[in-house]
Picture 1 (cartoon, rainbow, N blue to C red):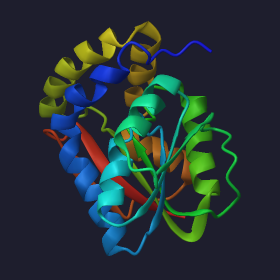
Picture 2 (picture 1 turned 120 degrees about the vertical axis):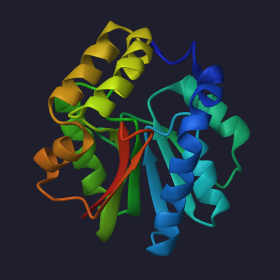
Picture 3 (picture 1 turned 180 degrees about the vertical axis):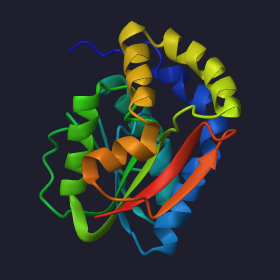
Length: 206
C-alpha cells in the first residue's frame, strides 16, 4: 500500500507539537472532567494525543491508515496503548465501544464524502452518553482568520495538490463547526478556538 505519510512520519511531531500541545492537553482534561475514560483517537498519527490521554489515566486506543505513522506511535508509546492500522471509515469496533472519539486535524485532509463517513463511523462506536471531540479548521470568515489562513494555506499546499484541494473544500463547506453539524445535525456542546481563531476544539454529544 502506498503510504503518503512515509516521508514525513519522523518529522511530524517536531512540526506540529508547538501548535498542538495545548489542544492535546485540553482534550485530555475534557475527557477527565466528564468521566470519558475510554477514548478512540481516529487518525492518531504518531500517537501524541493517545500518549497525553494515557498520562492522564485514560484508556487510549489509536487508529490510523498509515503504517509509517503507527510505527512511530508504537515506538514512543507505552505498551498499554493499542494501535490499529485500519480504514477509519470502516473500523472493526462494535457499536457503542467508547466514551469519546477524537479527531485531531483528521477531517480537512479528506474529501467531504469521506469526512461524512468518518464522522458517522465515530458516532457509531460512541456509547449512548459518549462525546465526539474534534479539532480542525474554522472557516476564514473574518479578516484576522483570512490573514492567518493565508499562511496556513502555504503549508497545506506543501502537503500536495489533493490535500490542498480537500482543505479548500473543507473551508468552503464552513469549517469544522458547519461540516460537523451538516453531517450529525447537532450543535457543539463547547467550542474552544486556538491559534488566532483559525481552528477550534469542539465537542458533540452522541
